[in-house]
Length: 337
Image (cartoon, rainbow, N blue to C red; front, side, top):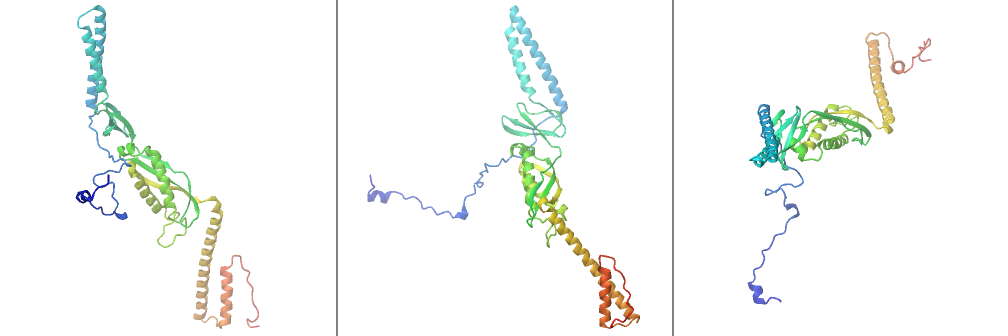
């Protein structure tokens, strides 16, 4: 039924909402909200006792288990014989076995170089880093995580450098688990995770540097191996920090041009070396000729006009810059004949 004019006049109107600017979108992480796509867990130490208390509790549990079994056996024999309190013995023995089995879950063995990530019905309660036989909270399940130093070599990747030349590159990554909680809960498999992230970082770093002949302020892959390795280590560390992994060292293990351009690049390098050698030879020859002319003129050994000086310079440069052995020619006539 349509509203009358009086009803519409007395009905409260909804408050006007100001339009939301596209650059003023609400951040879901504000006001205490958490990002559901990331596991926000850091390692904590679980309450545990050393080997002395663990061995004492283990001995008491064995004694209680043995006494409970004795009660169950004697109770079963008494039931057949019709003795008094037979059922009570069986009940007490069964309860004793159950309690001993329950307390036995608080015993754990941790080897050197390993940790035990403890969970209580799916809830993370801490990580045990004590080694040997230890006491942990009962009814907790443990997952062993190695904190030893690991290393692996990436696959040889074929990427284009900064100049667009295809190169083959590989690296060795030395790493260690630093936060066991993140390593277990933040990623599915931290070993596969670090291998994939290391190859991704290596591919990115290789594309930001030329293989050789860097420009001003640019580091080449072949000439600045230490700087490139440090940059690669920083990028891999930033990528795997989510999984609680620590990068100790990253080194480039293989670096070469791709086979399809290796021969052409080798010829270019050889041509560059020949040109550099020629420049040095010519510079040395010019210096030697200048010194020879200066000594001849300063000592008044021979007087030469411009034509004779030019011919002498030409002959000396031919002799000094020639690849083959020159044959001397003795001129017995006049230079102007």
